[in-house]
Length: 116
Ligand code: 5GP
Ligand code: ZN
Image 1 (cartoon, protein in one colour):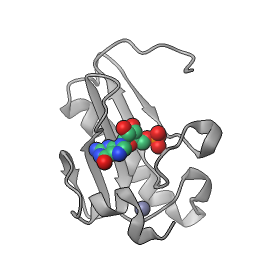
Image 2 (cartoon, rainbow, N blue to C red):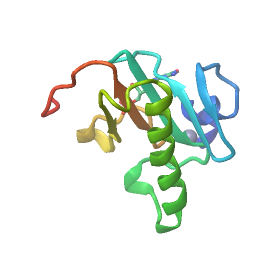
Image 3 (cartoon, protein in one colour):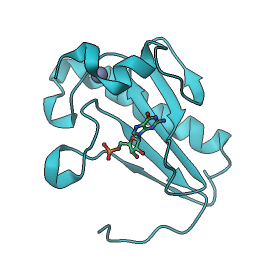
């Protein structure tokens, strides 16, 4: 799929609307369209990285930024104390449905383990 057709690239470019909670220079966070918990935010790099499996060693800084933003958003969303989960699905067996790296931030209810 060409990058110009990538759903999350389009959201990052403002071509498709999203409920944005953080718009940084290199990362974007927005609410999931089909929330699986009271808080369900997606954090993405604005740069197209197809999946964690496709990330390069040079992406270390942006991956750290995504994780630290998830920490900040957990605080802002009021789930830092009650607890939360961060998930990066990768590939078919990992359940990745959008081929642009994204981290799920989930919280606001008790989350079961192990996942299905
Ligand atoms: P994955 O299954 O790839 O780990 O997660 C993709 C997520 O993107 C799903 O939770 C899905 O609900 C969400 N999603 C798919 N399309 C859209 C969209 O157009 N807008 C938003 N905000 N979320 C989307
Ligand atoms: Zn993309």
